[in-house]
Length: 109
Length: 115
Image 1: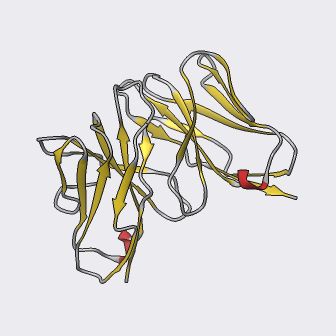
Image 2 (image 1 turned 30 degrees about the horizontal axis):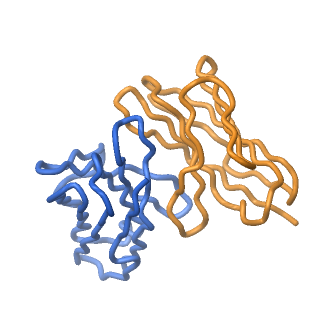
Image 3 (image 1 turned 60 degrees about the vertical axis):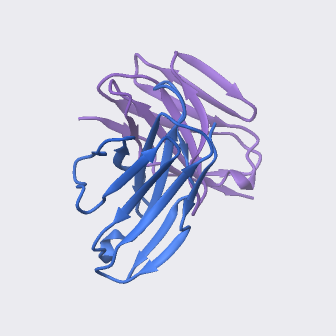
């Protein structure tokens, strides 16, 4: 079957750095996405990786290793507004998005 | 990107009734999807809305319960039929503006509570 694993919840301190991991086993691979979802709101797109390596976008970076079926989202200089759920999703061979359960990130002052 | 609106934004409904949710996109999009997200859970794909033909439903979802229309490339509706409290959820419209390599975008969601 298809499976995406990410931690259920993480806690970090304002101003610090946090890394949210995602491992996947899917039938085929056509890209990995990270979305941010604040409580009660729709998911918003953060990043997309299709090749191995690191993609940096401001305070957020996303890394992919296709051989390991592994990705992480790195958030630097954490702000209170970064408290949200972070969803990892992979496009399989049918270009369907397979979603992880999401990681709830709690930022403490 | 695409700007997506949904109506209604929220509703409280009685058991046994039906609710139709509308999704409007500001540009023509290749693919439209309907998702459900129950409290504290991740996204579950209900179906892909196909323009001019019947929707493609995922396992566990059937047309009689969740009829979908897509009359053109900018609009779709999802009906939740014969509702029960278990249907209380957030229903999200999502679009893929271009090809399959594109990013998927989400509407603001419809929060449904069934009493």
